[in-house]
Image (cartoon, rainbow, N blue to C red; front, top):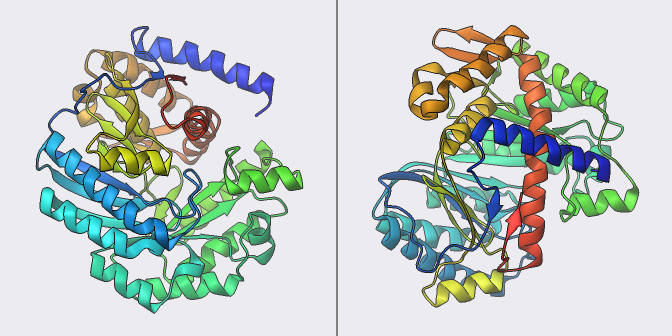
Length: 425
């Protein structure tokens, strides 16, 4: 993002946020107050961040680190259980790059979660093609994993090379086929579009291959990078830039048309699912607690974010202290607007829940939804507003341009300083 574009984003952000949420909400992450505790919860989800080759908290895989990581994660589970009570955990998402390289640690942490909470939902995990074999599948089942996401990205050798993947396409083929035949409730394949030298035909060929190999869900996303990711570093070295709008639009339309023709229903801006398999999603949870360095938590009163530094996180949890480095409280109707943002991401807004979620801001939000309908970005379907294909595309574009800018600002500073004093987004 160049300087002029960044300034435009900041100005538009301030105007839109002030109009929608009001002037009281502060868009600043700061250290929580001394002795701060989260509110008691009856139900929530859990995110377990395993920092093994992830894009955000980069820690090279080292067996020596797994034992201190495990002990720290166990301590953090205990801290949350003491703070919020024996809540019902409605889902567990395990991410961080390649968490399947640390399945012993994951199994140990999940055991503690079962001891301290009521684990009632699915366990989801992400992995990469060159880390999937029979032993990994068996150990995932032993840990109770039901939903798996495989970071295929592409079955095309040229596309894999562009994003720095060094394995052959046959590795991804074998991995996806093995997962699809191994009795998981759902298998998702991540696929990228709008890569350099990639055509819409290349993208739909990848979709067809993933479906033929047994993927229940296809999650498609464009090339977007942060300065500190391995892809970002690679792109700067090769001078590859983000694709232009026309390419992204053409590829997104081709994806939507292919999925509609082949029985995959849209379940989010990025995702398409066929049949009755459970939906796999890494983000759409109304509330969650985060375990691990760099993990965030979405609580009824706002967001909190753990320190990104692995050693600082281990030290804090080992001393029985919170590893939370930053907090942004929700004021006014911010919780309701956050709910609406994710319903738009789901591409389906349930009107029955609208007034309860938005409160006094419901009339203002309904005005926006009427505009969405009038310009053809959404359609009324029973008691829901459902985004059309153009609506889903333009939301993806807005999300890519604005939301990722905020994440980039926050995570860049959090990586630079283990305990930042303030980060304005």
